[in-house]
Length: 479
Image 1: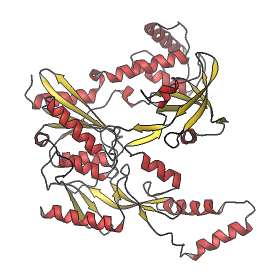
Image 2 (image 1 turned 135 degrees about the vertical axis):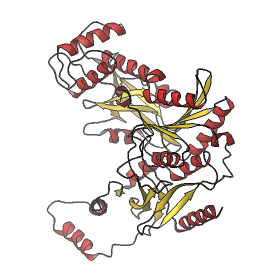
Image 3 (image 1 turned 90 degrees about the vertical axis):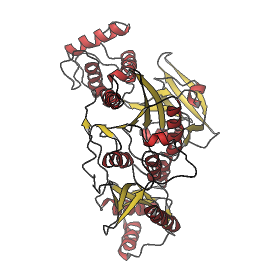
């Protein structure tokens, strides 16, 4: 317990100073600085010269924010950065247990802002928003010059307030006026499923990010799987960009004995601080978790906190890692709140695996490398434009890649709509029972999205998952 008490002292000292070590992907609390004015006189001199003599008027706050961003940029570290007040709020929200909004996925296609899908039971669905609805106005104002982030920010607001939307619905060829009341949308980071194959019960648990409530969700999910008879566990962190370090610690504590070092923190003076697993007064995990065979699935999108978990399981020989090499982010950031409402995020530590390996720029290598079907790596979205033979566009290349992934013969995938593409489009349309026409149109892209999503939902097409199931079946002594 000695290391455990030392870690507790370190954490209490950290909390006392108001600064939290965070990983980003992993993210955490902020510390106030008191808003002291810069002591570097040359910065104040430059600010005065620009404001007094510059031919181009610039807001003083913008100059200060530019200087802050520049100071972070000159470090040359992509994880050390300045966040404006709005960016800082969005950053914190990304790991919150719930968000206020309308509950709809929005994409940008050829300059149009398209509803991809409203979340089931969400305010967007209740208000009648449908896939392929094009957003024309928000609260009476058009969207010219807006980025996707701008549109999302305009739609968001306080719980219980409403947002007016003018949408164009292609199926009706008309504009509609809708009012959507913003609500809290729960954000689930952990999902589970019991996989039954060849007489064995395997628990599958996916973690999309390590958020505030992930450890509690993990507890509920693993308890449910054990109650259902799971004999082993697949942990899926593919595409997981990171999250809160304390969530990783809580989850690791459920898988290995108490007082086990699951990572180290190394400061600028190369002093190592062990991070050890501990029992929790709030979270009581089933002891069976510490004995179950485990496979962790990862890919190049698994970063930061995900790598803390995979690195720990690998070094401690507690789990078998399969998939592809992870992203490779081995630094830790402090976030300091500034007097202007912004935040300075600065890399202050490295984190190391239990065997003191620094994975930065290298990633965690899997025990068994398995490449995934390319369809699983595509961002599936809706396209609102029409394309035909002889045209060239990235939307066409997207359609070509999906057709090839589904087994259709296409000679090129560079976005040029050639004769082989036309033949493949016609064949796909015939297979899907839609109008025979060698054209990539809204109907074609909607059916293509539907078909690819069905392909990805079929576990037999997930090569990495199938390898994990096969490995665990062998571990459990299956035939």
